[in-house]
Image (cartoon, helix red, strand yellow):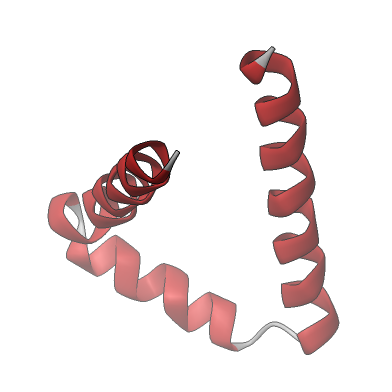
Length: 62
């Protein structure tokens, strides 16, 4: 189980690193826009991400 978790974290880090590597200017512009969002908007995006991730896990884990 821990190997699976380490693999999942490693894959997440690879995906998280793609945008800053391929387009540092675009990545910076995106974060400047994110900084202007309200706390509620950021929480909504976080919740949406968790729900989509959970649904994908439930679909593909079984």
